Figure (cartoon, one colour):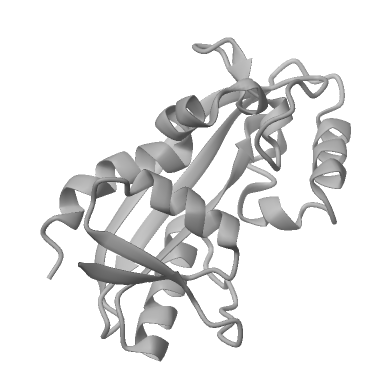
Length: 190
């Protein structure tokens, strides 16, 4: 069994990653709280790799990290890398995004996620990107999920992320797609 240190202090993110790895002989552990990594990359991939590499080197163990965010076409890709820092709470972030979009008819958006796994020496063993295309609604719908989920609508499902079951969201989301690409490669980690 391989242990991967997750480059987060968030227990919820650890549980979500573990759900994607069901059936794989991997154990996930949270990074120590004292280890903080500044996200200085200019892309989701750079940030995911930076976090995985930093934790792997600091701990001398295998590490996994992801970076993700929402990119809205009309806003030039914003909030993008700053999705989590677009406001002080989920509600603030949603209100700001809706305010900035205003009555714009082009509401196309995508969630992007990159997952990276680093060897104990800090070299990247695997990285994978997942994208989920959708639209931003004018008003929130649904009570599940977190973040921008109540306003991110997936036309093929006729639902927002917040209206989907956790299983469906895990399957079709940006993070789900990144892990689907990553999983076959996990068996060959050395």
